[in-house]
Amino acid sequence: MKSTKYLVILACVLLSTLSSVAQQRFSKEEFKQKRAAFLKQELDLTPAEAARFIPLSEELMEKKFELNREAREKARAIRNRSNVSDAEYEQVIEQPPQRSYARKRILPEVQTGTPHAQSA
Image (cartoon, rainbow, N blue to C red; front, side, top):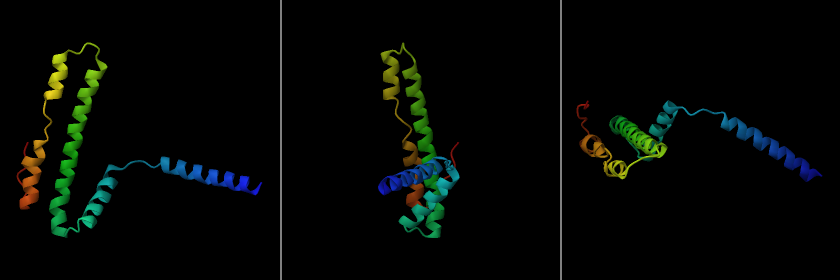
């Protein structure tokens, strides 16, 4: 009998905890701040290094997000159509992603520590 009461109490506590956690909203700015603090600590960055690295890292993350969004939209567009030709499939498959952005823009900045002019 006692064990049943403890189980019921434990279940109620667990459910109330889970429901309060589920109600929390995702904040992009809070995530960026926590990520920046984590990177500074784990990489043992000096304030000067962090001032150069964190903005580049955020820029790379945003660019990757946009590229992935474009890829998902293309895949969704093809998946939702019933009469897709083989040529259209091949075009999507063979179209290279814009991953050279990191090599052209961000990698040189990290290596040299000097930011390049923002490209349009």
